[in-house]
Amino acid sequence: MLAQVTKRNNNVKQVEEYDMSDIADRVKKIVIEHLGVDAEKVTESASFIDDLGADSLDTVELVMAFEEEFGVEIPDDAADTILTVGDAIKFISKAQS
Amino acid sequence: MFDLTGRKALVTGASGGIGEAIARQLHSQGATVGLHGTRVERLEALAAELGERVELFPANLSDRDAVSELGKSAEEKLGGVDILVNNAGITKDGLFVRMSDEAWDQVMEVNLTAVFRLTRELMHPMMKRRNGRIINITSVVGVSGNPGQANYCAAKAGMIGFSKSLAQEVAPRNVTVNCVAPGFIESAMTEKLNDKQKEAIMGAIPMRRMGTGMEIASAVTWLASNEASYVTGQTVHVNGGMLMV
Image (cartoon, rainbow over all chains, first blue to last red; front, side, top):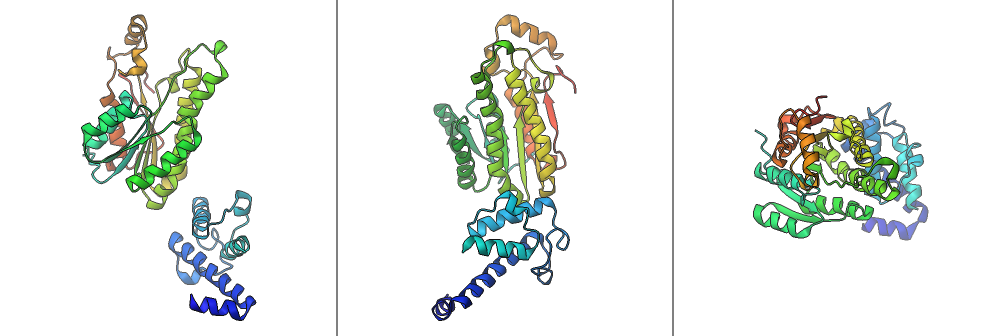
């Protein structure tokens, strides 16, 4: 927390990166826990369905887990565009800024 | 058999005859029961009789927000709902050509829309826990049809289609969805019938008697138990043989 405050004071750009990586970590954690996959498989380019073995029910549950974790609403048409881990991180970063 | 110790059940319409019997039997098998109903005095009397492991959830199922709130508060107060019994139902009978929009809408709202909303509220937590039982109380007339009950039969048939779809969606999460279809059961709903109607009904029932709430509750208890873990998307008919499907 202290590091975050210091960074905020120092450099705005750096703070954005910090938040982004924080979001990325939390997104990855949810994906790892929910799908029960190895952490190294959960890269930003990994597709939930093609690479991580998710089915349609998993993707809905992931979206609901993201909504809960980050307090954002992900409408169905937006959810349809979230195909990879990176897509989720980008959407949530944008929604929170 | 059918031990429900530690399980938490929410029964809607527990102030009615069948709902009360269901609540009693789930409770007797060890479950903690949430009693939903509209007649608070009857709920309180039942709760007092059951003693421990009981919570009350009065709510008006025609009020959509109240239905969502019911789901949320049951999930919270019971500490997770493992078994949801959608039992509450109303009738607004009348011959079709004279059926009002109101009679149609009210029956749809309570008998079908409330089931959809309450189940949606409780489904996600069940999926997360990888365990759940949804038991919907439909009716023999949802399958056979019945003159004077186009609205009620539509809602009850709708419930069966709803349950089958949902059963397929959530089966991978170990949540089962089934229906119990009572035939003619001794209850406030069948007390409204006159003697002539009752006589005609008896003639159509091979067992020559009405069923009891406990006979419905027994099917519910089985579906709620671990013993029924491989049963989903089914409708269990409990009707003394009046319809065999």
